[in-house]
Length: 248
Ligand SMILES: [Fe+2]
View 1 (cartoon, protein in one colour):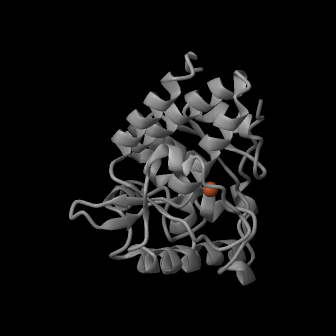
View 2: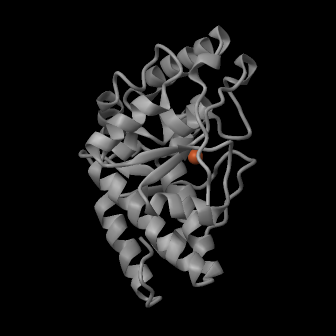
């Protein structure tokens, strides 16, 4: 089980806060006209806790999540094993790092830092439908890990990659809009993904679960989700075929 760490907020330097501010301001401007209202609404709802001013405090973001969708945050040093990750989600906990990239890493960073983990991932957890999807995703994942269903677990990891990290969401006008955290937290990825918005694949679970991904190259496949609630129902239907109890 993951042992949550503490954020040492006073240890951030001016460099950290300046890097944060540059990343935040540049990305908010870049997302204009591209990001889904689900994301923008949620980011706006986090004002006071996740702002351009300085590196955010985990406790302030968590307090807002708690009030809104009942989620909590766990500080981790970096990537954690998938079984632990599912367990946390099943308990309505999202994990985040607290380190901020160097000023010369504004455009590219190999391992997710706090800007990715928070600016990218946390706002949508303020949305009831998105939060419910993530919770269910964790419960389903934990059950499949416990049952030793390795292929299904791999399928879930691909769904996470192509939806939570790199997904598009269909907007009210029918046009695709950006949602995935890997896109929202990256200037280059935002523009690259946006340039491919007319070549999206429909989010059909069995297709996405059979699409391998690479973390070390720029993305070529993007999927479009029509509706987050429908995706959760699709996930439930897929999971029902395993005849397992979801693990709370
Ligand atoms: Fe991520």
